[in-house]
Amino acid sequence: MADDKSITSTSNWPERAAQIVVEVTDNIQEKGISPLYRLVRIVTLGLMGLLLTIAVAILGLIGVIRVLDSYLFAAHQWITYAILGTIFLVAGLILWTKRIKKED
Image 1 (cartoon, one colour):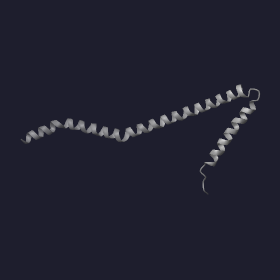
Image 2 (tube, rainbow, N blue to C red; image 1 turned 90 degrees about the vertical axis):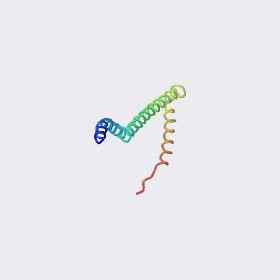
Image 3 (tube, rainbow, N blue to C red; image 1 turned 180 degrees about the horizontal axis):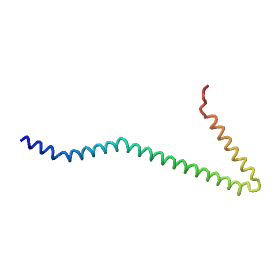
């Protein structure tokens, strides 16, 4: 009977070894690779979104300037730049008042 246990335990070791390898690799993937993959995906999509937003903002500003120059103030282009300058000045002043001040 002692021989039956040793035969059973020695014939089962390849399955047990394979199971341990699968458990270890699943554990490594779950705790190490999956969070890293999610982080890289979030950073990549965030950067792409930021670049797309910047491109749309620049193209929108160019479109606004062209419309104002061509249709509204065709003879006096300086009015376009005065209006946009005033808008950006007011926006900058509002952001300046919202800044976090460093204490010395």
